[in-house]
Length: 96
Image 1 (cartoon, one colour):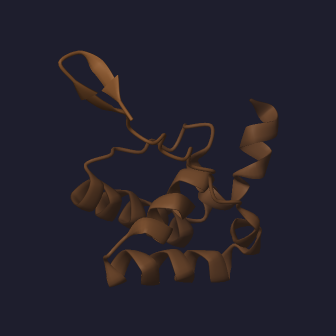
Image 2: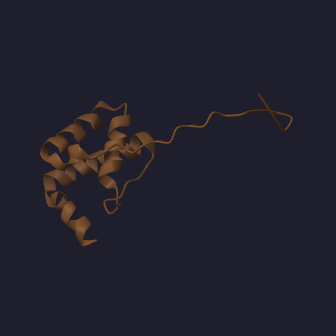
């Protein structure tokens, strides 16, 4: 936990914390997902939702945050599993 706290020392800056809260609020509004500051992969989740968003305000807020916290630029997007090709079923039997 100490390691995680040392990585997130930038959250102690009130201006940066305000930007994170704004991102969280916009993510909740658009996606219905409530992110918590204590989550292990908070930075990655913020980055993922900022990439998926249709909200220009969320994209701008994330860009502002990454400009002020350079280590957030290095956050890798989470690999989404490819959806398997769905099998067609007819009367309980798989159809070609």
